[in-house]
Image (cartoon, rainbow, N blue to C red):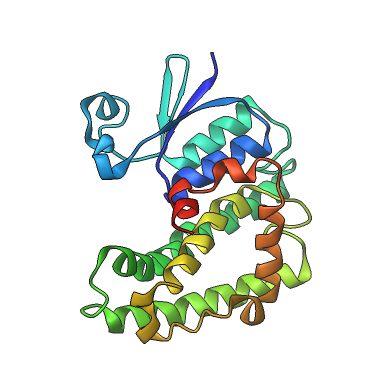
Length: 222
């Protein structure tokens, strides 16, 4: 029986799991959860994850939630290509980059993304600008890293890249929204401000299977 993945369009957490499955060329059954229909609060979904969050993976009788946990599971089940490192040093670098992402970079991005997409920009304008200052600093560091090496943790793509990439795309989608225009976030044009990160984005878009992971409602709105 194929792995089932319950995911939501535009969720960076779900997107990273889909990317990992495609990169590892693992067959899976897609189960799109539509937030607009409150499907994440349906009893049958809450039976899989009482928190009502995506992603959720079901492999036979085994059910797992939380994106990094799912990614770690997939790495053990399908070890090639190795995305969490082959040596202790590689694994350490990858987890350091992952930790920087979920401890520092992603929370700053979330302070921008949330109000832009869900309302409250006027009330939170000062906090959004402060978060944007932090995001620019973090992106500058990442841009410098990618100017020295092809991927965040070294010479090969890893879970660190896969975990962060959807957040960058979501941030840029928010930065391009009309609601963000008065804030002068200092993120655009992205390609001239952060050229190495822009090239890194291009490598993701060129991946086989990338289109299957792309948020369908983004494509519909294009």
